[in-house]
Length: 290
Image 1 (tube, rainbow, N blue to C red):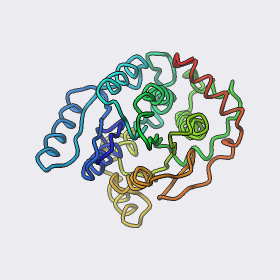
Image 2 (cartoon, rainbow, N blue to C red; image 1 turned 180 degrees about the horizontal axis):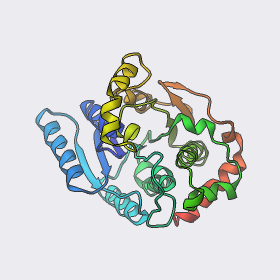
Image 3 (tube, rainbow, N blue to C red; image 1 turned 90 degrees about the vertical axis):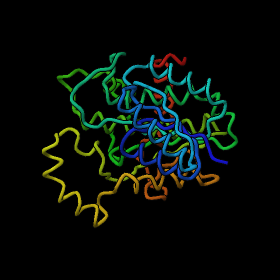
Image 4 (cartoon, one colour; image 1 turned 135 degrees about the horizontal axis):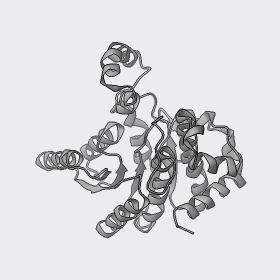
């Protein structure tokens, strides 16, 4: 019997590739995507196609990760519709964006990549705890290995940074590190759920070139094609392999960091348990969980 798997950002890139691969294996995917006509039509068409070929179900639920109220609404829909959720894949993300703040006045990368999905996982706990082998997997980045902040006040400053001090790549790196940190910390808090963070590799998705426009995508095509041919850049489907491996493995060491279906040595700051606890408690305050 297939698993019920919640995927954020299931409308494009790795999220869409995962949705296709997992439903081909008979799983039921709950696609959490920004609620617009294009995304809804995409998921509905995929659902109809899967039904016609006897593949796993796909359901669409709208979510706006820029707004914690929307996250709560989406989570309540999931809980009301699905008594049991076996896997949550926190896949949605943005990278090195122009300076933007969310509805709750957090820097966008911090909230979209981390804080909103931190809230989502906690709100889905009633359905996750009904699964005998629940798993939560974060789509992180190798850049998190280079994160240097290990003081709560400096970490908090990245969440509410002013435009004059904003560095898009630094904010991206720290948001991805925080995913990794919470995967490790929550593994201790919730021993009946397996947590992991995955670096999928350099992947040929919209995230790779969305900041540079269509001209860059066209001009870089030959170089990307060459990089894919020699294995430096992956297709979205290829990038799903570690996620699928962890979903299908009966068990693994919870809180670990993975690349190419193998554990990878994470940032050493993850050994600072007091700091990770401080991040967790502050995240609960910001999301109204405490």
